[in-house]
Image (cartoon, rainbow, N blue to C red):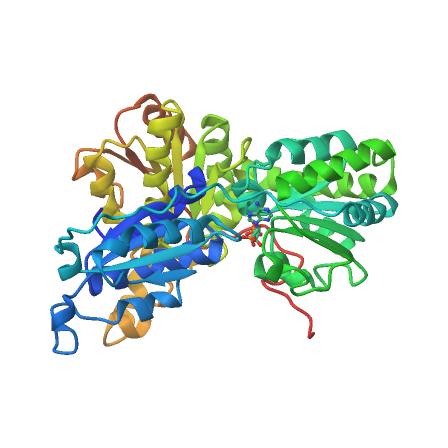
Length: 522
Ligand code: ADP
């Protein structure tokens, strides 16, 4: 790849998609520093990743050696495990431990430092290899805790299940689908929890998200943290009386932000099977005619109608909803969607539907902007090995594309048929149209003094970046042009394409009930 940062993003995403750490190799000093972004991204997301960094020869250390840097110490903040084997015979032990640490408990990053002189060392000792790393054990919950959890769930007036990317990572989709569908409980996916149960399920209340969170009196949290993504579980976004029922593989995560009424340490898939068994014995199903379901359905319909209005406005430059509506109607249901940007990601989360787990990759828990092309490359390589017909659709804001746009050379070099769609509103959140931009530019002594830092060059022709490398590029202004470009791109299974959509610089998302990151004083 062109930059270690994109390579480490790709390796982290591959770890999430395969449940096995991918390995990112970097050169010393600056090479490792570039990879820190991906190490932090994987670590904060709870994804397995192994980074192996070359480093300065040990006999040059302290003398200003080539690319000398305290790499082990630096990596410690970004990793679960860091090491530098002291001699060549010990390398296998550190590899086994790095691998095991990256997948046991909450997954994360392992860093192995290999100085130049160690790599070229020889040994005449017989190396005794450690045994192969076993899969992590699946821990179950004590029966009393399951009973206590189902007592709360079945007596709640307004139960809600929140499905996070921990459920997706842990492959818990089958028992969770059974829990939701058999017992008819409303559920809310987090951004990367989408698809564990299909977004099209009648039990999905994503389009009544604010209402569901604010009103529910009992939330079953499956593989999601009560962090900023879930407003720390606090009012006004959550009901102040809400009972939290929590299942997590990380003991340290239990009771974070809000004290849980039942906190279970265990593997989601196994624990949900225990919950299902108990609910079967109770013969319990949530009443579909309850006032809770009626409230949720009403809100769902109201919100869908508001969005329908915005989708039907196809005046140019386009708004986000009109463009997303066209994309959603054309892309195959089983596409892997990569989505990042400001408004582009927020709106894309609601407009692009996922049918299957691990089919959405975005800025994640760390809110990392610039992960898009790295994630898309990982997804395309995963498809090559596992589902060659599946498409990868990478929808990015123009600002997000700018972080690593030259990785399009990598995409073209390996003939990865990724479709990159850029929502180009000429700015971060909002931009300026060409005329206003020019006026401001001419106003002062230097453009840096007059142009807002969130504005980017209006109508930049990003599609030409892929054309430089032989890929197809389209600049589109209308839904008809978007339709033609997307159909052509979908019919080409050998080559990537970039579709650059001109979006109104001031287009916004649907009005929100609460400001972003609302949190009461605790
Ligand atoms: P989201 O961003 O979707 O809200 P988070 O990354 O915040 O999700 O939370 C995922 C949670 O899932 C983490 O707390 C992690 O420890 C947990 N987790 C990961 N794998 C498992 C598993 N197999 N069983 C239970 N919990 C898991």
